[in-house]
Length: 542
Image (cartoon, rainbow, N blue to C red; front, top):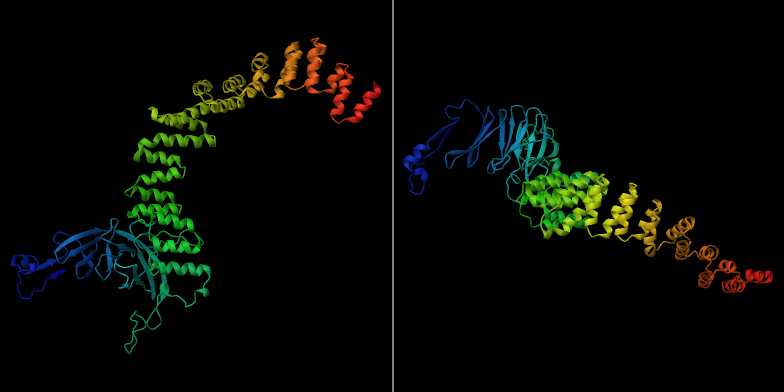
């Protein structure tokens, strides 16, 4: 392949080509260059570039103004044909020797994109839409593939698809049969008049009410693919709509129209984000694709957003892995939160490990460390290290912790240790209940002034009565408001009628009055209580 530059014979000092030495160096160029064992299989000339492909899979851009090659791309197999976009040639559709189609963009970081649903067989031609082929404006680059079966296949190049493996994705818009008599695709009659052919991707009836819901969604897909819907985020997870494109304004209008205000608020927060990867991460997070969102955040200028997202989602394992690389100083705080979750779900050994990892030096972290230590105390007991848990529990001045640890110990039938923790936390009724199980009556006697449960006091009274400790039994019966038994003890065992009379007057107990043979008082108590018939019968009997 030779390039010859025509000369006019006119010299101009401002024209760099007029310089004799420079002009000689640009006089001609031969491709492929000497020493390269390859064959040029296709080429294309634009106002700025000569672009050619080889049987060895190379695509080269030669800059006509500078007379140098600036981009060389190596494909894994030979290039059979290529079709650059007509405006400036910065996007190329090429077909390799395996008849697979690709999009090549030398200005893109990941320059080569596989075209999915590319027609098989002999491709006759690829035509670019001149109005859509450029990178400016709202409409996307659109091209049409003319296959060997007389069908036109439409495609759109979308630059901001967060699910694209590369910076671009190629969307298949559908196929359109070529009308009979228009082979090859000339769209011109014998008289020279042009024939209009509307692609299926651009067809739309005059009345949208004639379409079903599924048809409307498909129609919006096609219109959006060609860029005809103005700036649009696309089709997110709301009534039949899902999307992944970074166009915010139109999306806000769509969601406002369908009443999805939560999406509108979320999009308003991201409206002024300039970092494309960061914005892509936000959108992926809204769509619920958290792994993709993390990947995009890590590629953005604010990778810490991935850590914040995992923490907000309570996904602590992923958060710890991210914190190890992005923010090691956050590991203790994340460990504490993770430990709390593990303890709540019953993974006590895991919780213990992470509570211990959460401990931090320094008085400024006292509140944080207190949470970790209380967690260590509880989980250590649950994991069988009772001594460690109780030791830490007694060192921490917290009634709530003593109750929690006491309940854990009670659950594993460590009644003695549980009772001591209840007692130290001033939970006297709970402590007394366990001391009764242990038959530790002396301890119950010490706690009796603080016990408010009549049931426990009566149990203690019965135990003391059976042991012959009648004075203690009477006091316990009186504290438990069992005045009849208290009167009985005073009369039958303590020979203390004065205390019995005091209790009868205090309690107005008819049974107690009967025990004292004070029937006048008993009748009076019955009348005061409204039991007139019983009072009359007792008076008759006496």
